[in-house]
Image (cartoon, rainbow, N blue to C red):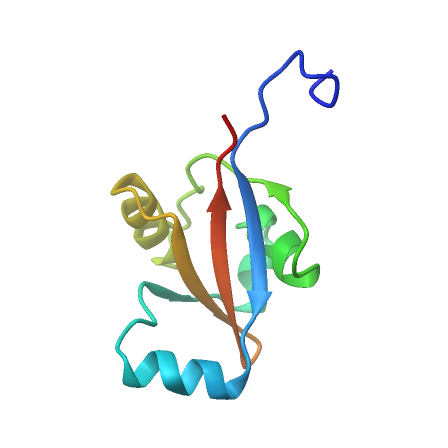
Length: 108
């Protein structure tokens, strides 16, 4: 029904894999913020399913989840929720030795 225009498209999350040169340049410019480090176990237990889909399929849009579930062993959920609650629409994720630019795309 959404594809037919009967329901609005929710915000979408898109990842872009950054090259080492881009990461270095963003770091020098101090614009690699906010950045969140995610470890495999966070994906294994089901946290950040939208982020996991996006980084495994760079360039594709995925429905952005609402608030992330708080897990007692990690602070990443609280940090992400705080940043997104403050209106952040672009952030960075470090995962498995790679860095990704994450953008939230909103449709009218």
